[in-house]
Amino acid sequence: MANTTVRGALAIHGQNPQHLVETVIRNRIYESPYWKEHCFALTAETLIDKTIELRYIGGVYGNQKPTEFLCLLLKLLQIQPEKEILLEYLQADEFKYLRALAAMYVRMTFRATEVYELLEPLLKDFRKVRYRGMGGYSLTYIDEFVDQLLTEERVCDIILPRVPRRQVLEENGDLGPRKSLLLNAMEGEDDTETRGGRGDSRSSQNSRSRSRTPRSPSRGRTLSLKGASSGSASGSSSRSPSKGSDTGSGYRSRSRSISPDRIVVNM
Image (cartoon, rainbow, N blue to C red; front, side, top):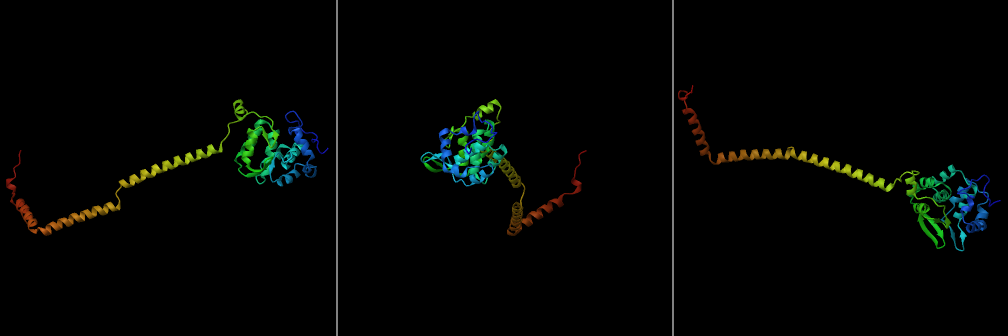
């Protein structure tokens, strides 16, 4: 009874949900001590506590031993929790291994359009996770793991159900175009650059208009020039006082020599 699927479970891809895991790996999971000791009578709520205790993801290691991650994945397939609970698993930002487990389950059981809609937002999660396989431990990231789920056929030694490519779904109208975060960031930078360019042009225009308007230094220069001209005039008059007196007397004598009788008016 412990290895049977829960009553009322829906068939996934036309078969029992547990049969999505290969028979050899499934039998090894049933025989593993972790399955017998920790996965017995787990529910959708108590499974969260076991997932939080995970320290790595992966498939089989050593002498074809299944990881704890695979055991909990098979348990999810066995109890088949509701969709709302799985969405809560995906939105749990503080528990990265719970999110990875939910992403694996969504990839294996959900429809193609829902797979892309639910897993693509996780590509912006760059947290580190440990991976354990036949070669030992290695380091990966949540976004790399999700990208493998969307592009590769086998992940964690499990053959994934086939899903159409995103381009095919877009051409059929089943899925909208993908929104790239990098493209949005680049467009935002372009907007800031254009705004900055306009601001620079305006500032340059203002600086030009300001340079055309007279400033206090120019006024000081004009005043100094006037002072210099007056000084030069005074200097010239002080240097040649005789010339200034001669010109002044000559001008006065000419204006006095003209009499009103000599003015001739042409009629």
